[in-house]
Amino acid sequence: MSIAFISDLHLEPIENSRLKTFYDLLLRAQSDFNSLYIIGDLFEYWIGDDDQNPINKNIIQNIKNATDNGLNIFLIHGNRDFLLGSKFEEMTGIQIIDDMTVIEDEFCKIMVSHGDVFCTDDVEYQNLKKTLRSEQWIETFLSKTIEERIDFANQLRSQSAESSSNKAENIMDVNMAYVNEIIDKNKIDILIHGHTHRPAVHKLDSGASRAVLGSWENNEGWIIEYKKGNIELKSFPL
Image (cartoon, rainbow, N blue to C red):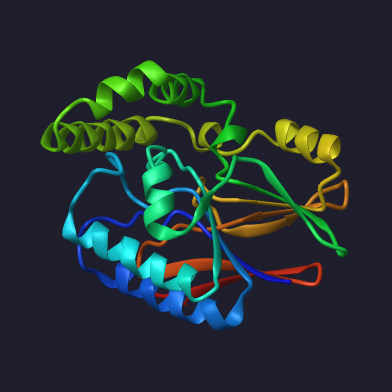
């Protein structure tokens, strides 16, 4: 079983190098991997499955081409694209899965997560996440016009950038006590996550590994490749 993991692409409805590299990866993945896991923030923002932006529609078609050709693609919601829904699944052929899903073969047990669930020290972020994921908030937001939703998404991005600039670095990173608790409780060999934009593979005292994907920025993308119990974190130019 050969699997690829990516996260934090932050694709926007703009033709740029990130978008082209993603299309190239989808083509390569069809021959190189059995499955592709996109573990959060595929998009910089997603305002609803009814968005008819032509570039987003082209992204959907490229993903559909890959799944039609036999590539299994799984997606975990990120903090930027949690409104991806059942219509998006239908249009692309992907499967949206729960955060902290466990994948297991004869070699090891892997947990995949966007990663923000482990950032428990960032109380402000966790409270905002709880609000934005509530059924009432989502229903109200989706009742607005496309233009209103885009304006709100841009405001939220600006507020997030300002808030992050005023926080200590350790607050925005994972809480290792919670990471170790989850790994021990679920008997995980490898935890793979994104969100923190701090690519590295950490060997933990328990013997498990925590592999962190980087974001696609500054002309550099990141991927984790898994095969027969081994993982490799790789970077590549955008």
